[in-house]
Length: 270
Image (tube, rainbow, N blue to C red):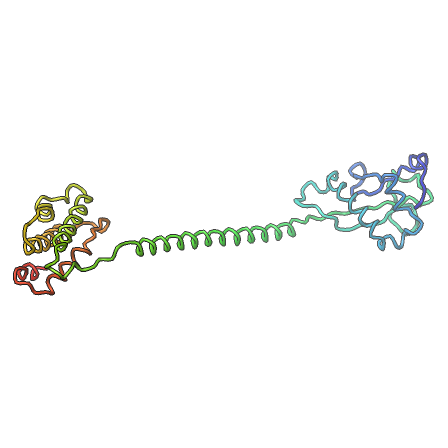
């Protein structure tokens, strides 16, 4: 690498990289001593400097600094180096600016850069980033919906699995627990009525669902009457209000299938 003394460096006043401005509008950044030595190394010639990547990188680095200083880039959204041109005080090259005329032998090389607005390229990049962001956001949103749907579905299946199924009441009318079973069904219906708004909890249905009886036949009649009263009274209630009649309906169907004489009239009404 060429050795450049401090005195010679001051005397040459090397520019380094400048823009294409004219007169006082021209902006430039001076090479440091180390960078000047790199550019003026013996192997770096005026006809082969583009073949040295280290030199190109150095010029581009200085050119980016000049872009921040230059008045030619003030209206550019994203200034980029458009062209690099070697200029100097030798025949066949552009005229050296006045600041570098002291290098009469032409050994102090410096470079002129022109700029272009890279907003088109930036816009494309921004569009791609926006599209990527939209894709990721949409995917995340759909994934959240899918997870929520799966959780909701699993919850419904779990509730359905854990909910006791509506089974017909026992057909063994001689069993001592049979009347208790019928009374339990009536009691559950009373609890359903108590869950409804006050304007639906009518007295007659409560009486038929809560009044006890001594004999099996009376218990069976009371159960069917309870179902009839509730069904007739609640058939026009809003869809948002749901009554669980499955158990009592199943028991009523089971009783009516037995064609018991004391239940014929009630079964016909069902």
